[in-house]
Length: 428
Image (tube, rainbow, N blue to C red; front, side):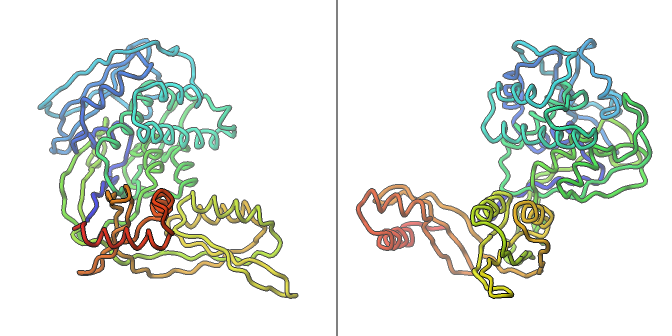
């Protein structure tokens, strides 16, 4: 029942091309990738996948080669020189077939990019991830330049190579299908780099904006130069990853994604597929609570919906009486520590409270997964939980309701029947 974990180790930074290369090196299907890229209405480029040496270690390099008249010079500060030192042990050149193209020299807005992604033949999850990454980039660019998302026109992230990098990453991640994702703190360099408008500090403003908005942990190293690109930071933010690895795990496979420049650091993104030796049963959670006596029921309902959609583990209201015997509601939210800032923002934005109490708690949780079971009454989803040698089965509410209605049984009766059938006929 152990899940597969994808771990991205960003001690040498992270960029779009490094992320794609690392996943390809882990075993993402190259044919699936090239087919997906060929389906995009985008031209003016080819891709090259090859092995190189970085710090004496074989790594995969994913390179988007732009036609001379299609090169966006704003991208130079993100990717630097296209030459990669090292011994080339394998090279693969791919030239996708392309459909009609957008003008190479027109700046694209977010809607233009979304249209390109939606036109491609991608899975729903890959398409959604690619769009989410670009939305995070748009949000950061809007923040940096003091504009709305609708007003932002991309030069850097709207360039062909960034579209290819982001779509390629989404396709490769979807192909690998990890159960969980853990991303380490992002390690960036120091100093300044040159862009179209002059010198800007490292970490670049778009990276700091993404880190601030999404609560990404950021570390500054003594390396002079840019190690974390806006695309790399947006990928980390879009994954909504866990921050902590299990205490014990087995490494199933390791992949290395090469960077394009040589700095006083390893120069690659390491990705690992892991499997916990034992499912973690204990973790730390936060309880956020606040008393609210002057907020409408509609606002509270909307708040709960927003909290749950944003990743709250649970959210609920308890009727209470406050000073002067005023009826009120106690809002309690259970969340992961890394989601605290996000939950607080939702509560302050949508309710009238002016303060939130925080409590850190230790939690014991059962190892669990959802089983799809063919029963005599139809297909049912059943939650399977384990504690030591004991296994517990809990039919999911929607399945029980559907089968009870179809078979003409009451809810409790159908629940018990499904539970008894699973105990007798399913072994895990």
